Amino acid sequence: MDVRPDPETSLAQPCIADTSLLSNFVHTGYAYLLHRLLPEPVLLSPTVLDPAEVLLPRPYTQALRSEFLRPLHMASLPGYEDYQAVAPLIQGFALGSGHLWRPVELTSQEAALAYELSEKRAWDRCRDSPGRYRRRRVGPGEAEAAAVAVCRGWTLLADDQAIIDLLRCLYPQVPVVRTCALLQAAARSGHVPCMEAAHLFNEVLPGRGFYVRKGEQVLRLRCSPPRCAWEGPS
Image (tube, rainbow, N blue to C red; front, top):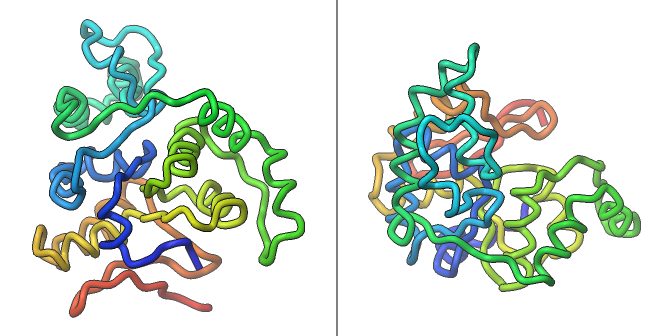
């Protein structure tokens, strides 16, 4: 089971997000839900969104450090025209620094931990832990966000199974909230109709290549009451 106390409790403290989860909300036009659910702007590390790159001249003709902004560069490349549809949403969110999001500078301790979490040898520490852990790559954005969450006692907003499993093994005290749990909380709070949230999670996001699986089971958002449920053969 994932490290996740009641989502509403976890969301009451500072929350730092990785790129994948942030993109789920911004690319679909639902970034406002993060603003309504969290007590302060969502926090982002430099690899996820670097403030220095937000105001670069358009078009973005160079590769970017910020994972969240990279679709703006790719949208100008042949074969990636689909990114043009989400480019205005990405730019609009990025320009909302201080209101929609807030940058976080890593301390030297956090940077060292982020590097450690991104290395495969981090999984060596899980050898004697209960449960089975499969070595998987942890990206730099997830590693930075997780390192900050560990060091500052914040909540991590992420869906990447590798970083969730690694934290479950090494730092089980860190709360992790996934996209589904965020939408569940939004529906329970009346920020969005549950059927709309369920359509987003069950239909729209899978159409964009995002889904959550556990073996043959798939995570779904259901209503009456709003809840995240694993469905399929156990």
